Image (cartoon, rainbow, N blue to C red):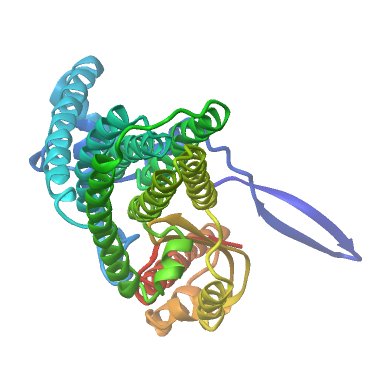
Length: 455
């Protein structure tokens, strides 16, 4: 160890000399002291457990559990072992690519298995039922429009086509949302449901509402007599029953999910907790109202012989679809912007942290809804250094520490003493962070990601 003399002060015949450690330069080679876990060593360097047996092992605090330590290795040792096993960097790179391909194929097979169960229950089941029913309704309504020439029936056929296409889009969104997180999307793909629902809302407006308004306006400008509406009434009656059944399925699914989360039916819908089921619920509610509206206007046309009533029915259906579209666009846009959770809930999380003895204060608290009832919590935490240090000392032999202090005679010995206990205190601080994050998640299951920054 090299020292330099500084701060020389002459006070009469007495000279005070203070020893100061020279500033150290840490070059690229300093990273050879970095640690790496066994799992990461095997994944990144394509090694087997037997390859790690002879390497130097170091016990460190676990970042996931503050009660058990785990074994790590020096990264430089692992890199050297990998080159010894594979012979060259090129051979190691080829093996990495091969294993990535195998992993990709495995993930694809798991994804297909997961899809098969996703569409047999919950929102997936609701969407599949809606696709089948609305597809049949579109076919029969289209036949009725061709036979009668009714503007209201045309609007209803377009309405069912829009519902079918939009629900097929929802199915794509659900299938993408169950994909596992990857390096590019570390928080997963759950927001794909909101994206699909948003596009669905735009689709309803453009295809459903737009065409219905156009056909209604053309009917007002150029009214034409209609053929017998008997078959149209029969098809509308069948559509009312089928759309009502789908509406009931979606309604029951939302009631069950809202009950599990302690919310009312209205709150669950307004907060867009399940966007896919929300779309089906609103589209089918609009479909039921649209069928009643179309049947009423067609009935007035039959009684009066005036086709203008039928055109007004088309405009009414278009307006109904426009309202549903506007609601879906608004709620899904809000959800994609990651809004904050309710202020009362944020306050509850804040008070939990502030009441912990190791915390002096917290700042810059953010709790955002990531979608599908997943919350991300972030805060800057000012820890009480005395409490953290005391927590460390409670686990130490104080007499031994005192004896070690008494043995310190030189700056080198003082440096070694401070480095040893300083590193352990930092580990204790990390354990406190892990403890708080773990307790936050246990007390609040909806909190999936916790980021505590140390001030």
